[in-house]
Length: 116
Image 1 (cartoon, one colour):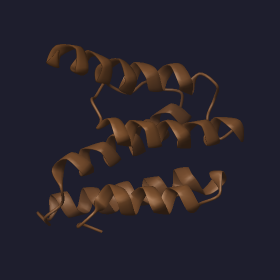
Image 2: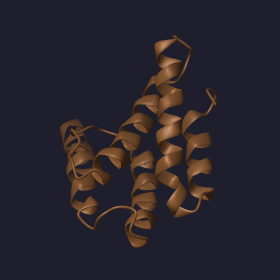
Image 3: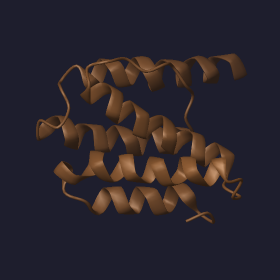
Image 4: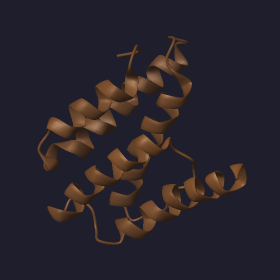
């Protein structure tokens, strides 16, 4: 899964029924964390993105907040689509919209503003 980490992850998550997304993401997060601990080569930016989203899912489902982080724009758009699916079927609360914006969209917009 190292060559195109995000691509593989997004294809897997996109094909799953909404009720299976969070458990699969949690398992993927554990595998990725193990890769990092054992110094297996993984694309750092993609690993950070996936781990951030997986943590967001777990923490949001538990009713907690996640720290702000910048994700690549294409990743953020995909995660937003998955978030919509999870809210629609009741896997995440409606408040996950605001939490997602606070955690990922606001930092992305700020980083874009800093560039220009």
